[in-house]
Image (tube, one colour):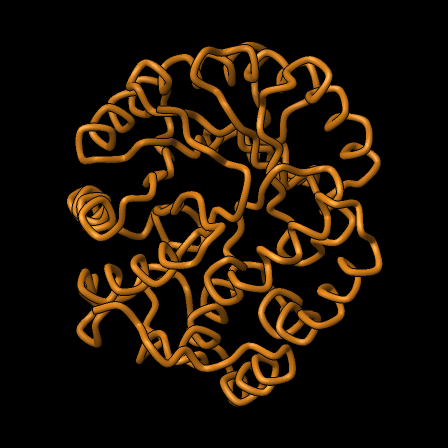
Length: 309
């Protein structure tokens, strides 16, 4: 059965114990809470927000199994292996572990050197052979690993590619390339991942695939509905309501800090009890926890009274 991407697809953080081990029980509780919210369509793990590349091979596969056992929602796994053959084998293992979908990262050598024509589409063809539904992942335009329109169209034509997660962060390109993708592939689900400035993209999308979905899923689902209804005043209202927490979590010195800040927000909401991270992430500076707690309150995000066991 095809994944229904047309809603909120959170990218949960990964929780760790004080000794540095993955807290599989804590991750299962977070998965169950997110899955309990109407409008959440899938859970996307082992990506940037989830510190996916900081987990060992065995930890990655076990986390997929934990999520698969914890919730009936589709589990989508990040595919990050460098070589195309490596990514193909990684996808097969993650499919066998219980993943349903794949968020296919570019080969990270392309971030520095760019890609050769044809290499990205071959990567998607290799991953799609696993049986995982694939998401075309568009990186920011400031990197050399973002795909030109022709490459996006080639990838979208690969059987098994059913959605795109677009984080181009260049609205000139967004306004040209998203309509072209929609026109060529009307069934391709368009998802934004512009956590730090969602409003400009909210009126062109079918769903959201965002780390933001960890901390404010209830409001993001309403925000998305306003965008789909082309109700700008209501969407603007949600934008303004969420702006304190947007600033506190995503308008920081490095976007990588967002993963750490998300954990502070989750703790402020009563969903987790620590903010442990793995290197190379670092703890936030003095005052960050108080700042984020205040932002959670200012955005109207309440403490969750009942978290599934």
